[in-house]
Length: 337
Image 1 (cartoon, rainbow, N blue to C red):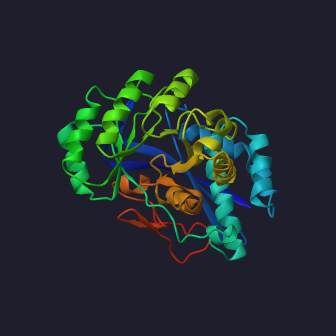
Image 2: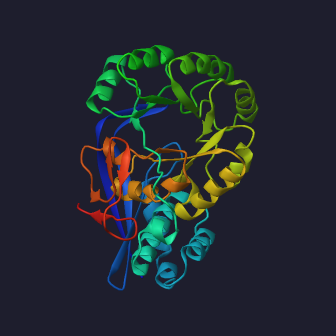
Image 3: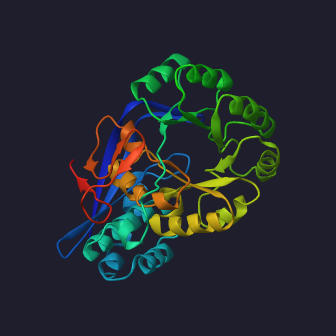
């Protein structure tokens, strides 16, 4: 089994701003695994909040190359366990590798990934489209540029309620808000009242990740559901989030790929929590992997490729929030750049 690493710099359609950072491009790493005439593809993007860069991922994956080469034929769960033991401190690199291996494995079985898992795709949720923090005028413009049934609105400024009030004047779509750790507990409880009146469905990660006392207070007093993101990174965090959040947003890059993400989603459902998967501005390579988890989800944020000025792959197609799979096996990905 051959490992091929391809670094990219993905150009964004607009400057993307959240409560703690802004950027115009997104560095990303594509992993390809080749064997017996088949190729599987995976992706992980860099992220300054988690202190992971493309060079870090490439270094750690190259060190695994001999172990990858000798791991042919393992099932994805065993492959993930082996690689995680060898590379325990870089879940982003592990994610890209796991996605590629799951894709390759399914292609060799002659099945789409959701078929291999025996998932029913007939009731898949719609994906939202993210509006990053900007001037109110530019946020309205971005929303008009992409008419959509569900918007995720990035907040964490000093005019958050005013932003949502103005956006609501221009759309009757479902609104979700994501403060990316930008609020306090009392601020969240107060904002939730105003946001509920404005038709907001839920609030994502309003407090800093480790403010567990604050999370508990918000969980017990918010009039809107609260979904964990930065507080739910790896498998053990699902249990920690129980009775502190109403649901969890699982990111493949943070937990180490599809293999642990599936376990996390099953665990969250068993605890009676809402399930969501989000993206990290991946290309269609990473987004197509997320698509195969849709039957496990209540909500999904898989608009990463839609935020790009130019994509580097084909795979699943998204129109007006709805995800369409192509005819290819595995995750359905083909690189075009």
